[in-house]
Length: 346
Ligand SMILES: NC(=O)c1ccc[n+]([C@@H]2O[C@H](COP(=O)([O-])OP(=O)(O)OC[C@H]3O[C@@H](n4cnc5c(N)ncnc54)[C@H](O)[C@@H]3O)[C@@H](O)[C@H]2O)c1
Ligand SMILES: [Zn+2]
Image (cartoon, rainbow, N blue to C red; front, side, top):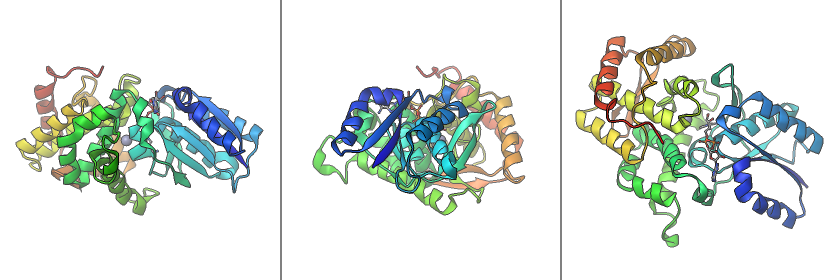
């Protein structure tokens, strides 16, 4: 039996010897390829390096899946390599960041950045399995825990009021405990288990019936309308979830301006974001960038804007008729309320 493992360099420093010991103990012939899978390196170059090594090592395409261990970047790059090798080689995802645990773990998408655009090259190939183990999160920097909580908050705002309330109440302590169990017996009821399960379940409800994204009305796109451009513009200053959160915060102002959210609901959402230590505004997110992103989205979504917006806490709908004047007014209020008080992420 042979296994080819692609692992993020930092994760390899922390857990590489345990991974090697696991395969050694089972008499598996293995190759661990550790790579600097960072957002700046998320390109075809790394995909090609993986493919060259896979080819040298030699695997049986039917019975020897490639294993990817790392954050979303590593899973996306290794997934794309697997989808290309002999047209499709099965692969397994082992997410080691919170963001990858609740988001990249369950999706079908692989990809790399190209021509200065986020995930411009990629494929829709779901992994054959995803192994979830929250103990990896023990070593994750606090900022990256917040980062993952942004995607969790996205699902809460779109689909699940209970998850939003849980994040309001327990968000800060989840951040402090890095989603580890404090009372081991409470494995089914503690906030870390419940919040991650709800985030994954709500994500799956949206992704499973629309695996190839034929339906363009996607609630999971909330926070992903203006963030891709913002993220690429100021890499590596902003993490993915931080850019998503800035986008969501702005959209909350749009939803409020259109009369979907009350002032109090808007305030509660922003307070929750701040308690999770997520940025709610950024000086580089200009009105010009917002309008450009919306125009770009219009081009790629069949002539309709398809904007997911919250209409209450934990409820959302897709709108095609948000006028430019609403966007401008929301932008002005958003800046007035946050530009002086907001600190850039550390
Ligand atoms: N395919 C999908 O469905 C999907 C979904 C969401 C996001 N993504 C992609 O995921 C990427 C973001 O993922 P990310 O936030 O995981 O970033 P990442 O992969 O860059 O990881 C973040 C950092 O954490 C380090 N790290 C990883 N695990 C660690 C651990 N257990 N302990 C200590 N350090 C650790 C990594 O070395 C890296 O420096 C983006 O490129 C985004 O496009 C893909
Ligand atoms: Zn995302």
